[in-house]
Length: 232
Image (tube, rainbow, N blue to C red):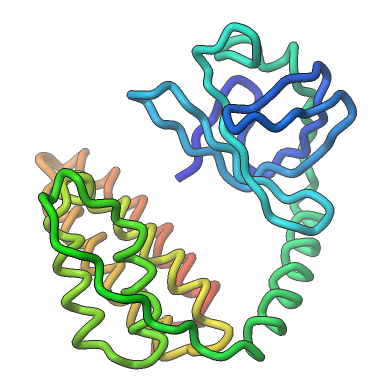
C-alpha cells in the first residue's frame, strides 16, 4: 500500500521545481520529471522511498524528510508540481510496459537459486535474501524448500501478527515478477500470500476491524485476478 505525502501519491506525474539531493546523494534538477508508482514511508527513520518510472525505466530514490535542506512534509508543493494521468492513458501505458516486460521475462531462464542465508538471531535477519531465495526455489518448482524459507520469514518480527500484510505484499510482488516465465510458480506464491492475508484477517478484534481488513484482502484478490486471471 502506497503512502501519500501532501499532494504526492501513486500514479501522479511529477516535475521537480527546486533542485535537491536525495538521501543516496543523487542530484535532482528543476524540470526533471517522472511518474510515481509507489511511496514507502519508514516512520521510525522519517524516510520516504519513491518508486518511479522515468523514460520507460523503473527506479527509486529516498528522501530524508527530517533534512531541512530538502523536501519535507507540508512543503512538497514548494519542490514538486504534480498532475494526474487520466485513467485511460495510465492503463494504456501500463499495459504497454507490462507487455514489454513480460516478453523480455518470458525469454529469460529461471534465476539461479542463491545459497541459504545463514541462521542468525531473528531480530538481525534481513528478509530480502530469504525472499530472493524463496522466489528462485519456486521458479525451479522446489516448493518444499521454498516452504521452509517461508517458515523462516514467519518468525521475523516485522512479519509477526499485524506485520503479515507486509509479507503478503512481498509474496505478491514475487508472484508478479516470476509470472511471465513460470505461471505455476506465480500461483504457488500467490497462494502463500493469501495464507498471510487470511491469517491477518482472522485477527480482527471487531466487526468494523474485520470489514476494514476484508477491504484489503478483496484488493489483493483483484490484483491476483488481474495477474493470473479468474481462479480455476
